[in-house]
Image (cartoon, rainbow over all chains, first blue to last red; front, top):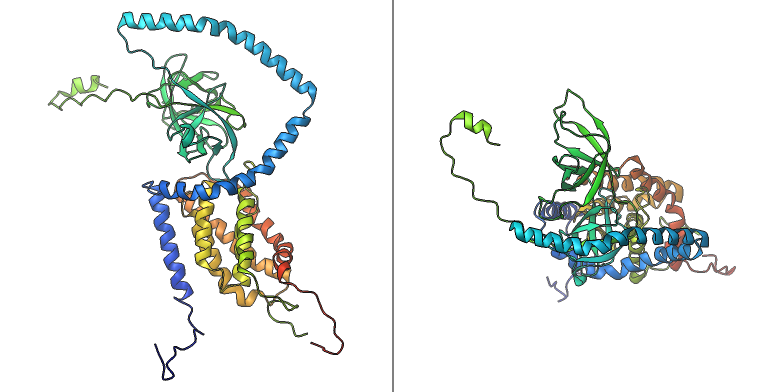
Amino acid sequence: MASVAGQGPPPFFKRGPAPLARLMFLLILCLVLLIADLRYRYLEVLRQAVSVVTYPLQMAAYGPVELARKVDTYFSSVQALTRENADLARKQVEVSGRLLRQDSVEQENLRLRALLDMKAQQPVSGVVAEILYNTRDTFSRRVILNKGLQQGIDTGQAVVDDAGVIGQVTRSYPLQAEVTLLSDKDQAVPVQITRNGLRAVIFGVGNGQLELRFLAASADVQVGDEVVTSGLDGVFLPGLPVAKVVRIDRDSSYSFARILCQPAAGIEQHGTVLVLGNREALPQVPEQAPVRDVPAKSKKGRR
Amino acid sequence: MQPTHSSRRILLPVKPWFILFTLLTAMTLNAVPLGRFPGFPDWIALTLAFWCVREPLRVGMLTAFIVGIVMDVIGGAVMGQHALAYVLLAYFAGQLSRRVLWFGLLQQSLHILPLLLLSQVAMLITRLMAGAAFPGWWYFAGCFLAAMLWTPLNYLLLLPQFRPVERDDNRPI
């Protein structure tokens, strides 16, 4: 816009759209992002791109913490180390007996399975990783591992430590991976009880404990029962220890019992974990038989 | 000397790289892993509020939005959660900027406290609607701690803008 003098007016009052308009625009943009991320998971690519930029920053922030931990380890008393060493040596002897026999047992198992014409249990590889730290997000229970896509860690893989299942990889960045712990409210794992093979689904409660949900109040569960993965999800291998039942509230006014469990693995501890490789896909669910006009009696019998 | 609304001392103009540097430092501080305790102050919110109040023409809602997205990635939160909270914070801090600077530092921090609380409540509401669990009342401790840090932060962030007080008896101003 040229004036008579041939120049535009100086930009005294050029301030763009009004603040309220800008606020509304950005708020709507944020809501779109929230919905796109929560509902449709469209933004993982954007997240990975930004994470490449923020990685050095995160490492810079983690540096002093790691240093403090290392100094702490360095000055930890010799006595504690000796005790730990003795403990490990004892464990090693205990385990080695079993390990020695494992090879032969596995061979035998393979042969027996072949005789029975069953599908061989697949061997599963694993990647050893280290838990770096908890994420800052206070609304979920997640930890960051020091290995990522480049070391072959992918979303959906199961993470275990020496005592049992810890959680599942929910996001993988090029050099890091994010693991959702079992105690997260949104983490569900199909499990079964070793004593009687009862199948259930275990959920996180949020305070470090787990809960077996959707089991009838009359279900055969006792305090002290071991809970292991059932492997029905096609993600976790069957038979990994998950938790131990610690408390059962059977309130007759509810149809489900409230069963609280203590995780078997050291979920809230830092340390070395094993990220299990992907399992082979489960066999396809058979096509559902076409619905026929069946009398009510036979319908009831089928479950 | 006549007090202006922004300082009792004459300040040098702010350097844009210093604003960027402080925001990056705040991000690094926010990325420091400190365990599961939810009540740590949000350094980015505090620094953003400071610059939105001090330099409303340079730092505004767009900066807050970008910083929020980066913080979402660092914190492993839902995309847009921090962005939403920081945009709200920046808007209200920008609106307050003319008024707040007339007050002393303690009263300023009382103005900032509701803004920080608002940003935390915004995050809480977004996550509760998405189905997360309530993190406990300690979650709100962070903004009170941050408000207490307003005074030291003020001196720290204005440090590059101060200049030595020259006493010249011939020139009273």
